Length: 160
Image (cartoon, rainbow, N blue to C red; front, side):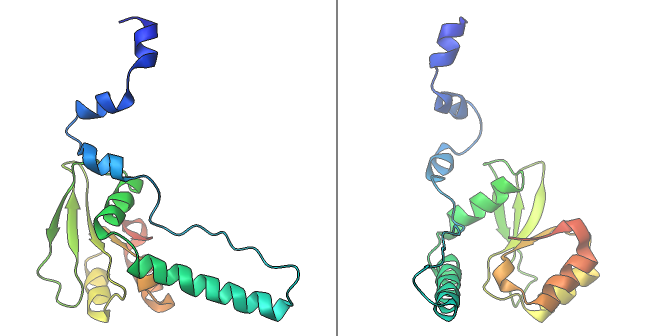
């Protein structure tokens, strides 16, 4: 194969030759995580800017919880954690207070939860089962739950 031909190939053709789900890859056009684009208004007072910042944060947090496509968000989180696009999800019925899914791509596995709040019962489970990997939305945790999970699980815990 000549160098000229190599540089003119469509990179999506290579994706088709893998087991990956091309449709999932094409859907990842932009991140599901809100960007920080706030800038204080120099014409407003400090109090007005603080209030505007608080509103901006509330709006962005609400957007993450209500305005995301669940499947796209899971795909983005898993890709950012080194998973292949051919992952599978299996609901873990043993968790009664949260929807916990087992994500596996054949090489890696993790449990993932996109619930708005992580139940105390779920935190207690992971404190006693620290060998399992877990990914949750950071917004779902208060400071105590986040500290307990990070302390018990170390690098096996990831809050996005």
